[in-house]
Image (cartoon, rainbow, N blue to C red):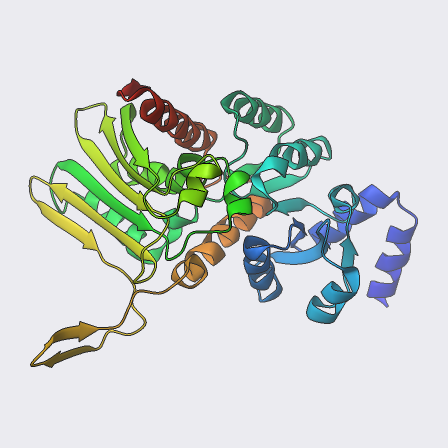
Length: 357
């Protein structure tokens, strides 16, 4: 009886008011997801399988066949037009997982529609555009979070907490290894924004996050070592970057687009009172000792396996911030600084010199 009365009352309200009422009444954030590539399907899977306080309201992909989508994922709203789901009055937040070149336009349209935004990195390849989008989001009172998921990996998070608690004294050097198991398709590389913006930007954010210090100088070197097609696409596949923090301490980052043994994700923090290490996550923890040596399983072979829990956690925290109107776990300053460091790394490599921030 009460449910019917409430429904009939809502039917008499303007569409936007009714939608807001329903979202509040259901105590959940209705989300539109845009882009059904690898990252889009990861986030969609998590949202369909119980992110607390969240529900998928709509999905859009410009090329995904609607019939295929409905047979795979169900019957809720789907459109090949992103604006149709952004402007849907039943949507409170948008998750953007499209190619980098489309991020800025979709973020701006979402801000104009008053929708909170989770966007995969980078926000844009232009630092000026990035700043302007963040400014517009602030003015519109729209929450805008970038997908720096590695902050929420349980092992990296524990390392940060131990370092912050003083377990190894004063921090001197952080060393980050980030190597993919295979070079991505050339078409992806052409549209990615380059290794520093697409790949190393995670490490720039992690270095700042764990050391909790400002970066004042960047020195980067890079080359094409694995595949000449990467160079023909205007990018590099191997890099070494040194970051200098405000107190003279360092981060050393090594990156590769290809490690034949799997997805290589390691971290070491060195201080005057000790060291913290985070090693690779292996397919199993068995070690076989025999006359020929010591044998272990390989590391996990993709980011989708390695960071499953952190992708879920970042989305949970985004939804929680939207529901409770609290601060996001990735700030505007974090977004600006990671992008700035990526620009400085590109400039440093090109000019063969350290670049001040």
